Image (cartoon, rainbow, N blue to C red; front, top):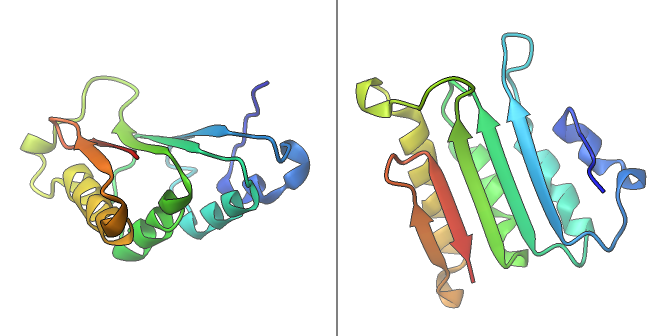
Length: 139
């Protein structure tokens, strides 16, 4: 069964899923009409006791993840066996090499930093995509 959630705040509507949910893949598509995510809303996944896999794909985001955002995302990771966070574009590849701010790469490395702190004693395996636009973590 697939659920389409159009805003992260709707993730807290527990009638959308059962407590038996083991994996979630959240996909965000950004446009001029939709450009802000409250990453603190991810705290609702803590209410899913069997959740072991969380994948987040973000399309067309042109702003950096702030430290507070990375912390809110990383706080969910210790309860998981695997976690994926990726930036993508609808058309063409992300070219952070020609972007003076390297926003995607900086966001991924910041997220990596916060996850590494939280999971220091568990020694997770963390891989960052060659272009710096994705992070994969598993225990």
